[in-house]
Image 1 (cartoon, rainbow, N blue to C red):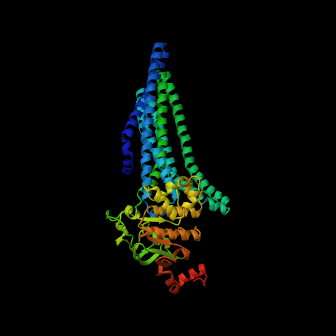
Image 2 (cartoon, one colour):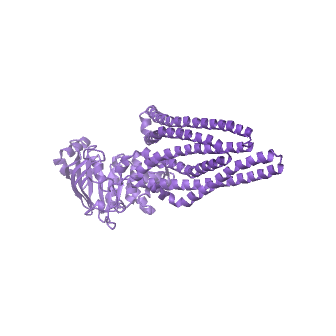
Image 3 (cartoon, rainbow, N blue to C red):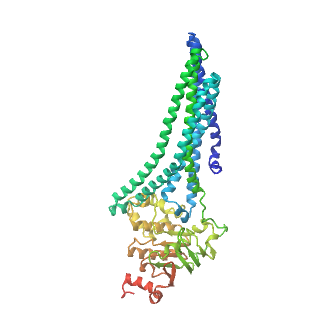
Length: 573
């Protein structure tokens, strides 16, 4: 709760003011039955129209004050609730942004979306409800009890007998429903995961004709959510009629006993009317409390889930040397071992090599050999399990993430573009980049020809994830975006796989002309992409098999020679 308080602190004044308005509304609600009793006993019974009129005007005034109190409470509680939720949602999002790849792997994307949206909304609803009901229900109940005791202590026993039954109904309903609330949020996670995967892979789904399978998959997740929700709500729906039954029995008993007291002359008809109103207020306050407990129970589940995100230990944090900056771009791996979280075996084993500033280093190997894992360690997308990765002679863990990653340009395997214009996407590399440099980077990446052929050019709006571009076009824009960053180290992780050979050759020529002392790491499947590299690293099952130039490896490395022969033919090799 202390953690939540810091997100509420900016709205603490509203949180305090809202209950004060609610106290005004409750006080007016308690006064109203007294006026009704007075109208019946002193106005109607005595035929005094002046008393009836004057008391009615008082009731109207009290009602208006109560309305003002209710509106004030609603305004300030809503303002506090939405502000609190905004801060909490921002904190969760900010935490997710700080996640390393390993942290992200702990949660499914759909689950993170649910926690940031639905779970925060559940906490907000409970908070807003509590600001109202934690004041209204107790004050209305206590005020009503005092009022009925003042009217008739004997008749008040009817109310006191009903209270334990309502308490038991609420207790057992919540005890059974609480585990189901947790299940509801988990099932909602599953629905969001299926939906997110479906939207991300919609082209593959349609290409393979798997729409019916995906519909069935979504329906199963949706039905699970519905059934779990229905089981929880069924318990709640049983509880509410039982509470209503207790209330009706209480009213019948009150009228029966109260009627006898009226006949005996110990109670007036106006008192009966007021007593009935107070009983209704008391029992409704108890019923409202049960609703409030439902909100709190659901919010408690959501609070735990949100806390799981906020409490996640970030395994990749800033280094202590805040002044360290990448000046040259030299890279060295020293006896590096790495494994993915949850895996029992290492993805990389005893990796050692060095790359001088300005060198082009190519990494080649079969699928699953550890190529991407290796380059992910340079910008600290993951951390090594053992050994060291050095940049300019310093362990990458000694740099701040901003200084380290600010000096590294990356074009990963998956070409990710964002909704917005092409120009906005390219400015991700450097938001202050001048237009001339952006055009130059696009030209080097061979993106300029197709961009300038578009009607809107660099102002062309892209769909989500760049859906209106081909795979090769997206890859070229991602390379341009990485170049605009003016990095010391450039990582191209199979980022020309969807580009034809002629275009790839032009990109490599442009890179050689542009990069100067830029250190380049190229991951590729094609020999043509790596043969001109200063150094080629051949990986197999997470180990370095050989390091050398193209001609050297052709003669001495069997794995490299097999790859070359399979692509170029024995005669060409």
